[in-house]
Image 1 (cartoon, rainbow, N blue to C red):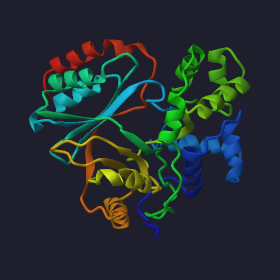
Image 2: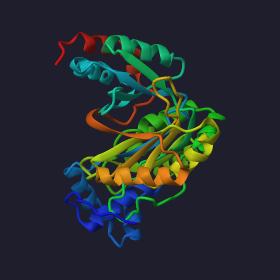
Image 3: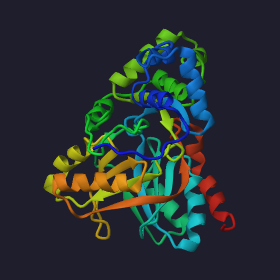
Image 4: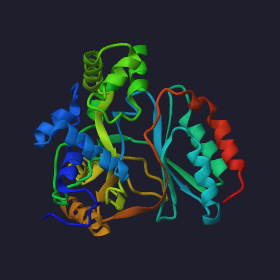
Length: 356
């Protein structure tokens, strides 16, 4: 069954282009011409439509997407329980950390949820404890990934995808493990720094990267291909602004799954196209949910329908869907920058500000 919903002010051709740009941005000297050929569009039309989508805030960024843990970073999802009167203060403290890429208020007793990462050699648990203290949280739960079943956001801009549509995950624990079996070189790190920023909207977007690295475009594409084969680079893609794109209902569905069924249930949930992330995470006495999944839809009803379909299929009825009510921060995580070494000063400065 397919669903329909209100869509942003972009026509069908632009939405079809954005579907392709999320999933199949090609490693090609002229990627916009290559994508246009798939959609019966010229290169100039593709770039015009991309600029239109940026102008209305739908496209957030076009860049390389790397796997945080494959690069050697430690990371975790963190749930905080913060008194409502201190929530703005706590959000400022958390946002000041350069390794925090996402930070939301959610409709739960654990009301502040964020992801935080640190480079190799840092004690992530100690960082989380420091954030707990500075934020004035009542309770904090560290929830690192125990197993990655899926990661990869692709919003259905053409609204043609059924809520129970399935497909193969783009990036899984197997690809991550493959990367962890290798090691990054100094040349790899230089390449990652040069490609983690936003692309220019020009016919040859890899050309500025080539100039920065002192090589030609063919070498850039070759190095990108090797990083992808080794499991460090997930893909190049357009990153969309969920809310501006019309996806205002983004639910974190969490599932209480018997330990022996976690691999089976995790793999099944990951197969849903409307699910962008699926992980196994640790449980606590006050948090019994072991499988986490992010469900995206234009309407809450679509998220709830997807969760109900999953529940019926796997026979797991003890689940919750948590919705974000405030987005405090959402960025692409920056890698191999100096700010991580100065995070304590940044967080202390944020904590000293007068509570809003």
